[in-house]
Length: 310
Image (cartoon, rainbow, N blue to C red; front, side, top):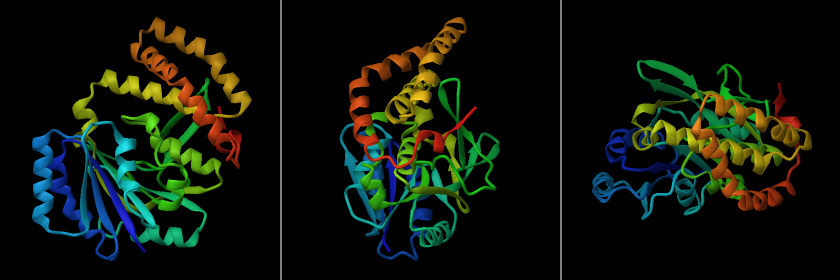
């Protein structure tokens, strides 16, 4: 069994230097596996620092790939994913550290369920002084939008698996074309690929026995993007997800009918990010429609079979 762990990096040499040995330890029982770190166009001094650290380890299981231009999460992970073959792909953000034997339980899950696309890990998220248990996601349709939130960790079902702490079957992930790079630089790409997999008839699950530590405050997004920019990108990608993936006519009509309400509400309580996100999504509409038409020919499940409407 070959497992490739994919770690995207942007100016995170110090962070990876602190966390990488734990990742190496997690592969001790999987001798044919590798760790692929994909650098997303980091500043040259930071990249050189990372390269020197990796070279100092003299570990043939670790490979460093560099992109010259920074582009975002989906394209960075995809570059590492499609560079080599493997049975499974583990996605870990640079600010995520696995606990010992975090892979043993999920390997059993895949052995039991041959239709399983991916499994999300229990994410012990350090947020300020608090530890929040994440990893299982819930979602529902309300007022024309898909609303997602953190779910109870005592259930194995999940709406999506996180792109920063999960494992997937490599063949299915590649069949899906990887993460859709239309979502670059970040957010919604993991919800998108999970949803597309489920509409094709595959299953996903959450495994609370497979545990990682996630230090959110140390990640690249909060370090390099303002709250306004993050919200703008998040709104844009929320629109893209709906326009690209939702095929049910009732849900689409519901989305259109609720749009004036959301626009009026965001005018009364000014939220520029909402309108910026909407306009940025509109600019991508030709690409979205093209992707939508290709995807819908393959679907085996309907939106209403997967989404609860409130």
